[in-house]
Length: 88
Image 1 (cartoon, rainbow, N blue to C red):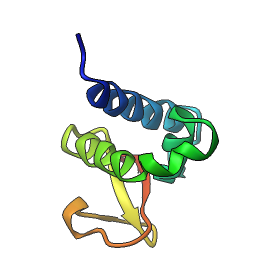
Image 2 (image 1 turned 180 degrees about the vertical axis):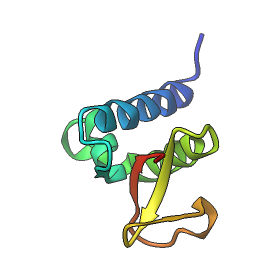
Image 3 (image 1 turned 90 degrees about the vertical axis):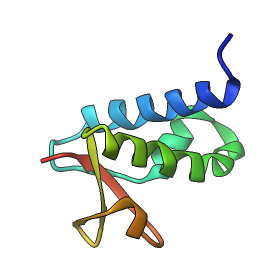
Image 4 (image 1 turned 60 degrees about the horizontal axis):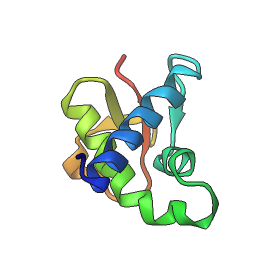
């Protein structure tokens, strides 16, 4: 049986990729978009850090990049609000 936390992590990764697939190639999303896609209602806020971790895993997999101010940043260096986009 799959760990519920692991299921949520996988759903967040999938949500990030699906949201980006539905947008222009250069478009970005906020981690909150993925959190809201996975958990409707007010519970999405608890998924903000897990969504950021999911984005970092997707960076490691070469799928996305994390940006701040429109520029790619190293996930470990990102402080404050981030955006996520497909690797160019």
